[in-house]
Image (cartoon, rainbow over all chains, first blue to last red; front, side, top):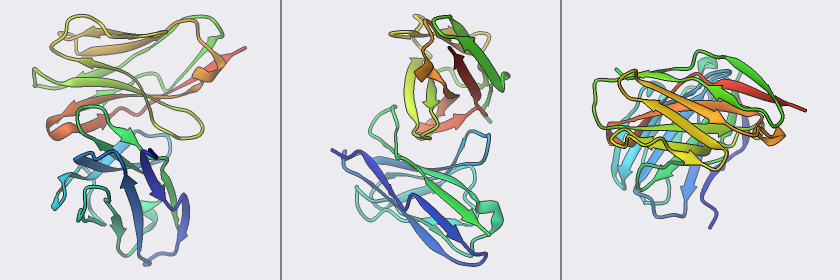
Length: 110
Length: 113
């Protein structure tokens, strides 16, 4: 039981490039989430999903897209990367109130 | 909009002593959940303790306990018998509709030997 896994762990992007952050959970959780954590700050919700085929915006969705075709996977797509998207990205999942977090992806856009 | 405020950017405590981290929140809801998360240097987010707003009894998990004051919208975390492994960033979080978490800015806790 691996829990929530994220790939890659680290990535450096050039301005204008695109990439997909992968997130997979093996706990059969319906809810999945993407957060970003800027230096010295708390996490902010980007997008979330309450089940396969259903996604919705969180607090800071601009510049990102998501899809949820299966229960297990919830990829986050960055189009036209900008320096403001330099952050640590966390994926999480839950079936009730407790959220289980992945190890995070550190993304730098230069 | 719900907000979570942690007024202590940094705290330090001697090993084996007790420390309290503060958190206040703002909401008009009556039923909600509150959490404390720990983020050590590894950056893994670890749930420390949770409190349901409808429960009057304060939650306790081993050396960790909370002081939940619903009317004052206050949710402090007390760590007893502090250990070096408690050194981390601690986040207070409020759960709103749809299981969405709103986090405070965090408090860095340093446990000194």
